[in-house]
Length: 338
Image: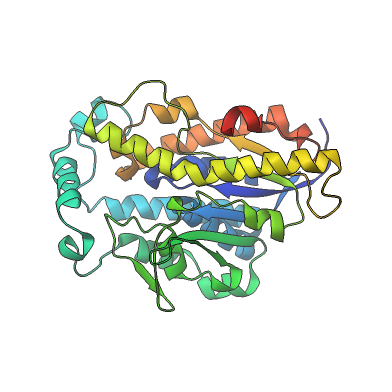
């Protein structure tokens, strides 16, 4: 295996508490000193991971990033401990992350279907606000970030994707990227309202193509692309609709990348467009078994379990594929996304 240092870009999907899987992947990648990071494009929970990682890298290098991510997820769990969406002893017996049968979750789910966040949360309380404020020095991050950040949000009025870049990365920008419209009031920034970026870019890839030199993009998947079973329960149908919706923009971009790569390889585009090398770290079989309710479960045991799964997947990916970084894609774009 080559020992040459290689620079990559990261694309981080959103997915609520399932973002702890991405924490584990990043935790392992940060230990790989042969790998450095140029740009990170991210959405929702991915945007939070990206921001916290960039903050940690900026103030304390790789170890600082690992510590910042661990501190962030610990704070998430502690903040959630005061809320109703915690697994009971019975829920824990049912398996990791299972709170579907919790009366608190059933009531919460019903309320979000009947009332808007402007009605059931008129004060617009968001526990993530305090956690991010306590974890990230946004002013320093905007001034000194050692990586290029691209955080995706959806403009409510125009329906277009908004990319917040380094000098625009504020607490509000991160919250906008993760603003689920059934849970939180739209985040207003400079006169525009924003919802979760997953609707238009989960995450977007084009900023990494146009604004980064590295041609390698590692996509860290949270949302399963394929499900063999047809969902029949109402919650499963809604979850599958969300998965399809939140994967659609990424799949469209991958189709465009595959087409552009073909033209570049034929010499049709000359030097105007570069060949993009795409990689993926995922745990699709594991994620398929997690119910939609588990995205709200911030129990520490569940989060650290997801982290450990992420670390294991990243370790296996590095063993099998690090040697190919910089030379070829390690997934079949056509088979996976087309």
